[in-house]
Amino acid sequence: MCVAYKPNTAFYEAYGIKGWQSLEKTINYLNKSYPDIFTIADAKRGDIGNTSTMYAKAFFEDLAFDSVTVAPYMGKDSVEPFLAFENKHTIMLALTSNEGAFDFQTKSIDEKELYKVVLETSKKWKNSENLMYVVGATKTEYFKEIRKIVPNSFLLVPGVGAQGGNLQDVCKYGMSDNVGLLINSSRGIIYASKEKDFAKKAALKAMELQVQMQEILKA
Image (cartoon, rainbow, N blue to C red):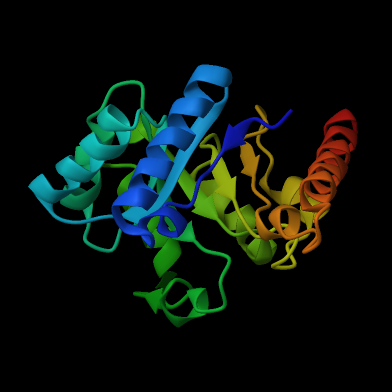
């Protein structure tokens, strides 16, 4: 059993109103069939004031997701509207798994990498206890430094599987006293097969990853 579902909204939005209706059907099904499973709208929103409030209402109230991913580039007034919603979580991009992360996120500002500035600054925002952070599985060499700044925060960790992230290293350097990790594998599971047996192969890949996680937790 997985611990969270994370629909990527772009793959729904690409189909216009029909796609948005499909997203609504997806989250309604998840909330009805698996009410105890954490849901994440992978939307990467982030805009000023009222706009962010409307984004938050869309995902938290209308669609009833438990959380949403956001981009922090525009600062606190683009993120705090999401944090204002009770019993919801905002998952902010900190250090992403893509190659382009090195364009900005690891560059230094006054001798401190940008991702560190983002983490430290976000802790000062109102309702920051509702924050989680995206940290890519392909950046395991940074996990020690990240845990010094946010030792107890949950991290959403994409990039295991198709992007080459190493599960063992992620857990070794990123796990907190209460585990503190949501490890995501998307393409490695969804595209396990291009044949008619895709659903069966996807299930086997998901089970394989789950077994690996269980072994790590036992150790």
